[in-house]
Length: 282
Image 1 (cartoon, rainbow, N blue to C red):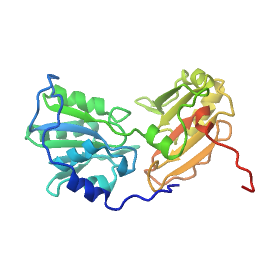
Image 2: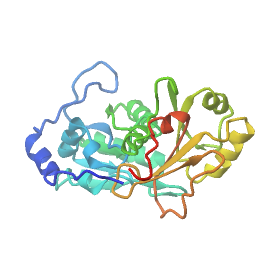
Image 3: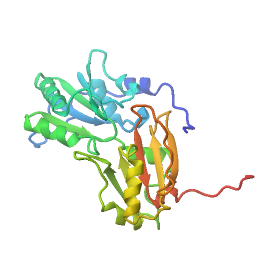
């Protein structure tokens, strides 16, 4: 549950304080570092939900955009930064329902950039962490379109911080792995994760809520201890955030989450390492 109130005038302050500058592309398609004054694409990570996690560079580029392609989880406050005359194109995806296919998104971005437009592609989290940013970067480069990437706070970092769940902890976990439960062949969990978790590794599992019970059963069958802490963060870093905790043997009940709810699964002993026992009469 969120305990801090956001400053009401944040986005107005950003609009007024950040200078408008149409450059900002550090590398063009050929990788020779030349400036690209017009007709280019920025792939922008917008973080896991809370618009205040947007970087200043991202906010400036959004304010300069002429064409905006945006995902399903982009907060309205972020879209409010776009110029009034900018064209907005919704290209959101959810399980089994894509507004526009991936190849269609790439074609539209390239066409807009070829028309001389300043294009921004708004993505939840970070473009290069399960955001298909690499595919879109490659498509732009193949088409000779200048393209740059603006990093964002990926879900594992934002959700873990907001839920106060350490991903590493001295003497408990010295490594963390980002993985996805969804692959191009369907949902599956690699057998390599079992020895990692047993050895004090932390696993951040993206898109893993729907397959939580199947994931737990498979990990248990591979020898992962049944008392391994598990947490599920739903709609992380937003006002709707819920954090559910349990163990691999006693999974938290996520219940019937509303359609479109974002979920991140965290597994490992470090996520419980910061907890302390508080006396009942404290």
